Length: 365
Image (cartoon, rainbow, N blue to C red; front, side, top):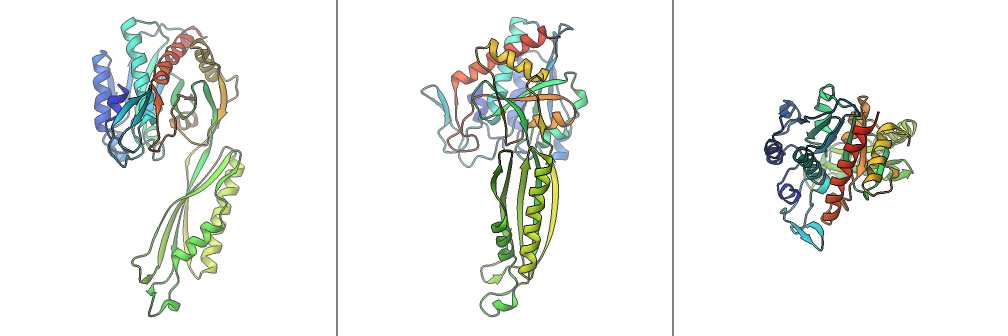
Protein backbone atom coordinates (compact mmCIF):
# COMPACT_ATOMS: atom_id res chain seq x y z
CA UNK A 1 0.00 0.00 0.00
CA UNK A 2 2.73 2.47 0.90
CA UNK A 3 4.73 1.74 -2.25
CA UNK A 4 1.60 2.33 -4.31
CA UNK A 5 0.77 5.61 -2.58
CA UNK A 6 4.36 6.86 -2.74
CA UNK A 7 4.44 6.32 -6.51
CA UNK A 8 1.54 8.78 -7.03
CA UNK A 9 2.58 12.46 -7.26
CA UNK A 10 0.54 14.63 -4.87
CA UNK A 11 2.08 18.08 -4.41
CA UNK A 12 -0.07 20.54 -2.44
CA UNK A 13 -3.30 21.19 -4.30
CA UNK A 14 -2.96 18.16 -6.59
CA UNK A 15 -3.93 15.32 -4.27
CA UNK A 16 -6.89 13.91 -6.24
CA UNK A 17 -5.24 10.69 -7.43
CA UNK A 18 -4.06 9.75 -3.95
CA UNK A 19 -7.45 10.71 -2.50
CA UNK A 20 -9.18 8.41 -4.97
CA UNK A 21 -6.84 5.55 -4.02
CA UNK A 22 -7.62 6.09 -0.33
CA UNK A 23 -11.35 6.19 -1.06
CA UNK A 24 -11.10 2.94 -3.01
CA UNK A 25 -9.43 1.31 -0.01
CA UNK A 26 -12.13 2.53 2.36
CA UNK A 27 -14.86 1.26 0.04
CA UNK A 28 -13.13 -2.12 -0.28
CA UNK A 29 -13.41 -2.39 3.51
CA UNK A 30 -17.11 -1.56 3.32
CA UNK A 31 -16.66 1.76 5.13
CA UNK A 32 -18.72 4.86 4.46
CA UNK A 33 -16.89 8.13 3.87
CA UNK A 34 -17.60 11.68 2.83
CA UNK A 35 -15.59 14.51 1.35
CA UNK A 36 -16.25 18.13 2.26
CA UNK A 37 -16.39 20.94 -0.31
CA UNK A 38 -13.28 22.77 0.91
CA UNK A 39 -11.20 21.83 -2.12
CA UNK A 40 -12.51 24.61 -4.32
CA UNK A 41 -12.00 27.33 -1.72
CA UNK A 42 -8.46 26.28 -0.76
CA UNK A 43 -7.23 25.55 -4.28
CA UNK A 44 -7.05 21.77 -4.06
CA UNK A 45 -8.39 18.98 -6.23
CA UNK A 46 -9.75 17.28 -3.09
CA UNK A 47 -11.59 18.20 0.06
CA UNK A 48 -11.09 16.71 3.50
CA UNK A 49 -12.09 13.04 3.63
CA UNK A 50 -13.74 11.77 6.82
CA UNK A 51 -14.53 8.14 7.57
CA UNK A 52 -16.16 6.73 10.72
CA UNK A 53 -15.44 3.12 11.56
CA UNK A 54 -18.55 1.49 13.03
CA UNK A 55 -18.42 -0.71 16.08
CA UNK A 56 -17.79 1.67 18.98
CA UNK A 57 -18.59 -0.12 22.22
CA UNK A 58 -20.02 2.93 23.98
CA UNK A 59 -17.27 2.99 26.58
CA UNK A 60 -13.69 4.11 26.65
CA UNK A 61 -12.18 6.99 24.67
CA UNK A 62 -13.12 7.48 21.00
CA UNK A 63 -10.15 8.61 18.92
CA UNK A 64 -9.52 10.14 15.51
CA UNK A 65 -6.48 9.50 13.33
CA UNK A 66 -5.37 12.16 10.87
CA UNK A 67 -2.86 12.14 7.99
CA UNK A 68 -2.26 14.52 5.11
CA UNK A 69 -2.22 13.36 1.49
CA UNK A 70 0.07 16.02 0.00
CA UNK A 71 3.84 15.99 -0.10
CA UNK A 72 6.42 18.66 -0.80
CA UNK A 73 6.68 18.92 -4.60
CA UNK A 74 8.89 16.20 -6.12
CA UNK A 75 11.56 17.35 -8.55
CA UNK A 76 12.06 13.98 -10.20
CA UNK A 77 10.31 10.67 -10.85
CA UNK A 78 8.71 8.76 -7.99
CA UNK A 79 10.13 5.24 -8.05
CA UNK A 80 9.89 3.76 -4.54
CA UNK A 81 12.02 0.66 -4.04
CA UNK A 82 12.89 -1.63 -1.13
CA UNK A 83 16.61 -2.10 -0.46
CA UNK A 84 17.74 -4.16 2.52
CA UNK A 85 14.42 -3.65 4.27
CA UNK A 86 14.38 0.14 3.73
CA UNK A 87 12.10 1.98 1.32
CA UNK A 88 13.74 4.76 -0.71
CA UNK A 89 12.99 6.60 -3.92
CA UNK A 90 15.20 5.53 -6.82
CA UNK A 91 14.12 8.60 -8.78
CA UNK A 92 16.41 11.04 -7.01
CA UNK A 93 13.76 13.09 -5.23
CA UNK A 94 11.54 12.81 -2.15
CA UNK A 95 9.93 9.52 -1.15
CA UNK A 96 6.73 10.96 0.32
CA UNK A 97 6.85 9.02 3.58
CA UNK A 98 5.76 12.40 4.95
CA UNK A 99 2.92 11.65 5.29
CA UNK A 100 1.96 8.67 3.14
CA UNK A 101 3.60 6.32 5.63
CA UNK A 102 0.94 7.42 8.11
CA UNK A 103 -1.81 7.02 5.51
CA UNK A 104 -0.78 3.43 4.76
CA UNK A 105 -0.43 2.55 8.45
CA UNK A 106 -3.82 3.95 9.39
CA UNK A 107 -5.57 2.19 6.52
CA UNK A 108 -3.91 -1.14 7.34
CA UNK A 109 -4.71 -0.84 11.05
CA UNK A 110 -8.36 -0.12 10.30
CA UNK A 111 -8.47 -2.98 7.78
CA UNK A 112 -7.37 -5.38 10.52
CA UNK A 113 -9.92 -3.93 12.92
CA UNK A 114 -12.70 -4.45 10.37
CA UNK A 115 -11.61 -7.92 9.24
CA UNK A 116 -10.95 -9.19 12.76
CA UNK A 117 -13.98 -7.39 14.19
CA UNK A 118 -11.84 -5.95 16.94
CA UNK A 119 -13.85 -3.99 19.52
CA UNK A 120 -13.06 -0.32 19.92
CA UNK A 121 -14.47 2.81 21.51
CA UNK A 122 -14.90 4.64 18.21
CA UNK A 123 -12.47 5.47 15.41
CA UNK A 124 -12.55 8.26 12.86
CA UNK A 125 -10.13 8.69 9.97
CA UNK A 126 -9.42 12.12 8.52
CA UNK A 127 -7.31 12.74 5.42
CA UNK A 128 -6.39 16.35 4.65
CA UNK A 129 -4.92 18.24 1.66
CA UNK A 130 -2.34 21.04 1.54
CA UNK A 131 -0.71 20.44 4.92
CA UNK A 132 2.76 21.21 3.60
CA UNK A 133 1.86 24.80 2.72
CA UNK A 134 0.41 25.90 6.05
CA UNK A 135 -1.98 23.21 7.35
CA UNK A 136 -4.54 24.59 4.90
CA UNK A 137 -6.80 21.55 4.64
CA UNK A 138 -7.05 21.06 8.40
CA UNK A 139 -7.90 24.73 8.89
CA UNK A 140 -10.69 24.37 6.30
CA UNK A 141 -12.18 21.32 8.02
CA UNK A 142 -15.15 21.75 10.35
CA UNK A 143 -13.73 20.14 13.49
CA UNK A 144 -17.21 19.98 15.03
CA UNK A 145 -17.93 17.06 12.70
CA UNK A 146 -15.54 14.91 14.70
CA UNK A 147 -17.19 12.89 17.45
CA UNK A 148 -13.84 12.07 19.09
CA UNK A 149 -12.10 14.74 21.15
CA UNK A 150 -8.76 12.93 21.25
CA UNK A 151 -6.66 12.34 18.16
CA UNK A 152 -3.29 11.34 16.79
CA UNK A 153 -1.19 12.26 13.79
CA UNK A 154 1.95 10.38 12.77
CA UNK A 155 3.88 13.26 11.26
CA UNK A 156 7.20 13.49 13.09
CA UNK A 157 10.47 12.33 11.53
CA UNK A 158 11.65 10.60 14.70
CA UNK A 159 12.07 7.06 16.05
CA UNK A 160 8.96 5.15 17.03
CA UNK A 161 8.30 5.83 20.70
CA UNK A 162 8.76 9.60 20.53
CA UNK A 163 5.74 11.61 21.70
CA UNK A 164 5.66 15.29 20.79
CA UNK A 165 4.64 17.40 23.78
CA UNK A 166 4.63 20.72 21.98
CA UNK A 167 5.12 22.59 18.73
CA UNK A 168 5.69 26.27 17.94
CA UNK A 169 3.56 29.11 16.72
CA UNK A 170 4.62 30.67 13.43
CA UNK A 171 4.45 34.20 12.08
CA UNK A 172 4.80 34.63 8.32
CA UNK A 173 6.46 37.90 7.33
CA UNK A 174 6.39 39.42 3.85
CA UNK A 175 8.27 42.60 3.00
CA UNK A 176 8.20 44.39 -0.33
CA UNK A 177 10.98 46.93 -0.86
CA UNK A 178 10.44 49.82 -3.27
CA UNK A 179 13.40 51.61 -4.81
CA UNK A 180 13.91 53.53 -8.06
CA UNK A 181 14.69 52.02 -11.45
CA UNK A 182 17.45 53.35 -13.65
CA UNK A 183 19.87 52.08 -16.28
CA UNK A 184 22.67 50.25 -14.50
CA UNK A 185 25.33 51.46 -16.94
CA UNK A 186 24.09 54.87 -18.08
CA UNK A 187 22.81 56.25 -14.77
CA UNK A 188 23.37 53.86 -11.85
CA UNK A 189 23.62 56.77 -9.40
CA UNK A 190 20.00 57.68 -10.15
CA UNK A 191 18.75 54.28 -9.09
CA UNK A 192 17.85 52.99 -5.64
CA UNK A 193 18.33 49.24 -5.44
CA UNK A 194 15.50 47.43 -3.69
CA UNK A 195 17.54 44.21 -3.85
CA UNK A 196 20.41 45.92 -2.02
CA UNK A 197 17.98 47.09 0.68
CA UNK A 198 16.49 43.62 1.04
CA UNK A 199 19.95 42.05 1.23
CA UNK A 200 20.96 44.47 3.98
CA UNK A 201 17.82 43.59 5.93
CA UNK A 202 18.48 39.85 5.64
CA UNK A 203 22.10 40.32 6.67
CA UNK A 204 20.98 42.07 9.86
CA UNK A 205 18.49 39.39 10.90
CA UNK A 206 19.11 36.66 13.48
CA UNK A 207 18.39 33.58 11.39
CA UNK A 208 18.51 29.88 12.10
CA UNK A 209 17.95 28.48 15.60
CA UNK A 210 17.87 31.54 17.84
CA UNK A 211 17.29 29.60 21.08
CA UNK A 212 16.17 26.13 22.18
CA UNK A 213 12.54 26.81 21.25
CA UNK A 214 12.74 29.42 18.48
CA UNK A 215 13.96 29.84 14.90
CA UNK A 216 13.82 32.32 12.04
CA UNK A 217 14.27 31.98 8.31
CA UNK A 218 14.13 33.91 5.04
CA UNK A 219 12.94 31.38 2.50
CA UNK A 220 12.23 33.31 -0.71
CA UNK A 221 13.72 36.44 -2.30
CA UNK A 222 12.48 37.77 -5.63
CA UNK A 223 12.98 41.08 -7.37
CA UNK A 224 14.18 43.15 -10.29
CA UNK A 225 13.19 43.18 -13.94
CA UNK A 226 16.43 42.86 -15.93
CA UNK A 227 20.17 42.53 -15.42
CA UNK A 228 20.84 46.07 -16.70
CA UNK A 229 18.22 47.84 -14.60
CA UNK A 230 18.74 48.94 -11.01
CA UNK A 231 15.93 46.97 -9.34
CA UNK A 232 13.01 49.06 -8.20
CA UNK A 233 11.35 46.26 -6.22
CA UNK A 234 12.24 43.18 -4.19
CA UNK A 235 10.11 40.91 -2.02
CA UNK A 236 11.24 38.63 0.80
CA UNK A 237 9.17 35.91 2.44
CA UNK A 238 10.34 35.09 5.94
CA UNK A 239 9.11 33.38 9.08
CA UNK A 240 9.65 33.35 12.82
CA UNK A 241 8.73 30.40 15.06
CA UNK A 242 8.72 29.88 18.79
CA UNK A 243 6.96 27.86 21.44
CA UNK A 244 7.07 30.96 23.65
CA UNK A 245 4.63 33.73 22.59
CA UNK A 246 6.79 36.49 24.06
CA UNK A 247 9.88 35.30 22.24
CA UNK A 248 7.91 35.02 19.00
CA UNK A 249 6.78 38.63 19.35
CA UNK A 250 10.33 39.85 20.02
CA UNK A 251 11.83 37.85 17.16
CA UNK A 252 9.16 39.07 14.74
CA UNK A 253 9.70 42.69 15.78
CA UNK A 254 13.47 42.32 15.33
CA UNK A 255 12.92 41.18 11.75
CA UNK A 256 10.52 44.07 11.08
CA UNK A 257 13.04 46.52 12.56
CA UNK A 258 15.77 45.14 10.31
CA UNK A 259 13.51 45.60 7.30
CA UNK A 260 12.64 49.20 8.23
CA UNK A 261 16.22 50.18 9.02
CA UNK A 262 17.61 48.67 5.81
CA UNK A 263 14.98 50.42 3.71
CA UNK A 264 15.61 53.82 5.30
CA UNK A 265 19.40 53.62 5.01
CA UNK A 266 19.13 52.60 1.34
CA UNK A 267 16.77 55.40 0.29
CA UNK A 268 14.01 52.86 -0.23
CA UNK A 269 10.65 52.18 1.36
CA UNK A 270 9.21 48.89 2.56
CA UNK A 271 5.71 47.52 3.03
CA UNK A 272 5.34 44.65 5.51
CA UNK A 273 2.67 42.09 6.32
CA UNK A 274 2.66 39.76 9.32
CA UNK A 275 0.28 36.82 9.64
CA UNK A 276 0.13 34.19 12.37
CA UNK A 277 0.08 31.05 10.26
CA UNK A 278 -0.66 28.68 13.11
CA UNK A 279 -0.63 28.60 16.89
CA UNK A 280 1.60 26.42 19.03
CA UNK A 281 0.63 24.08 21.85
CA UNK A 282 2.18 22.29 24.82
CA UNK A 283 1.12 19.18 26.73
CA UNK A 284 2.05 18.05 30.21
CA UNK A 285 3.36 14.50 30.39
CA UNK A 286 0.29 13.44 32.39
CA UNK A 287 -2.12 14.80 29.77
CA UNK A 288 -4.62 11.95 29.10
CA UNK A 289 -4.00 11.96 25.33
CA UNK A 290 -0.25 11.67 25.97
CA UNK A 291 -0.72 8.97 28.60
CA UNK A 292 -2.91 6.99 26.21
CA UNK A 293 -0.22 7.15 23.51
CA UNK A 294 2.43 6.09 26.03
CA UNK A 295 0.34 3.10 27.10
CA UNK A 296 -0.16 2.04 23.48
CA UNK A 297 3.56 2.32 22.78
CA UNK A 298 4.42 0.18 25.82
CA UNK A 299 1.93 -2.48 24.79
CA UNK A 300 3.57 -2.54 21.36
CA UNK A 301 7.00 -2.97 22.93
CA UNK A 302 8.33 0.61 22.78
CA UNK A 303 9.52 2.72 25.68
CA UNK A 304 7.89 6.16 25.34
CA UNK A 305 10.09 9.24 25.16
CA UNK A 306 8.92 12.85 24.99
CA UNK A 307 10.27 15.71 22.89
CA UNK A 308 9.31 19.07 21.44
CA UNK A 309 9.12 19.82 17.73
CA UNK A 310 10.34 22.81 15.77
CA UNK A 311 7.78 22.15 13.06
CA UNK A 312 4.02 22.15 12.82
CA UNK A 313 1.51 19.48 11.84
CA UNK A 314 -2.26 19.22 11.53
CA UNK A 315 -2.16 18.61 15.30
CA UNK A 316 -1.55 22.35 15.74
CA UNK A 317 -4.93 23.12 14.19
CA UNK A 318 -6.90 20.65 16.28
CA UNK A 319 -5.24 21.71 19.53
CA UNK A 320 -5.96 25.35 18.70
CA UNK A 321 -9.64 24.40 18.31
CA UNK A 322 -9.89 22.65 21.65
CA UNK A 323 -9.32 19.03 20.66
CA UNK A 324 -6.41 17.10 22.13
CA UNK A 325 -4.24 15.87 19.29
CA UNK A 326 -0.81 14.31 19.77
CA UNK A 327 1.90 13.92 17.14
CA UNK A 328 3.93 10.70 17.23
CA UNK A 329 7.27 9.79 15.68
CA UNK A 330 6.84 7.08 13.06
CA UNK A 331 10.37 6.29 11.87
CA UNK A 332 10.61 8.62 8.87
CA UNK A 333 14.17 9.79 8.13
CA UNK A 334 15.46 12.81 6.16
CA UNK A 335 12.01 13.96 5.05
CA UNK A 336 11.78 16.58 2.28
CA UNK A 337 15.10 15.40 0.79
CA UNK A 338 16.22 12.89 -1.86
CA UNK A 339 17.52 10.74 1.02
CA UNK A 340 14.05 10.37 2.56
CA UNK A 341 13.43 6.80 3.68
CA UNK A 342 11.56 4.55 6.07
CA UNK A 343 12.11 0.95 7.15
CA UNK A 344 9.50 -1.66 6.28
CA UNK A 345 9.75 -2.84 9.89
CA UNK A 346 8.76 0.63 11.11
CA UNK A 347 5.68 0.68 8.87
CA UNK A 348 4.65 -2.67 10.33
CA UNK A 349 5.47 -1.55 13.87
CA UNK A 350 3.30 1.55 13.59
CA UNK A 351 0.36 -0.66 12.67
CA UNK A 352 0.95 -2.54 15.93
CA UNK A 353 1.22 0.79 17.80
CA UNK A 354 -2.05 1.97 16.28
CA UNK A 355 -3.88 -1.20 17.27
CA UNK A 356 -2.43 -0.96 20.78
CA UNK A 357 -3.61 2.64 21.15
CA UNK A 358 -7.07 1.60 19.94
CA UNK A 359 -7.14 -1.19 22.55
CA UNK A 360 -5.90 1.12 25.31
CA UNK A 361 -8.49 3.73 24.34
CA UNK A 362 -11.29 1.17 24.57
CA UNK A 363 -10.18 0.25 28.10
CA UNK A 364 -9.72 3.83 29.31
CA UNK A 365 -12.27 5.77 31.32
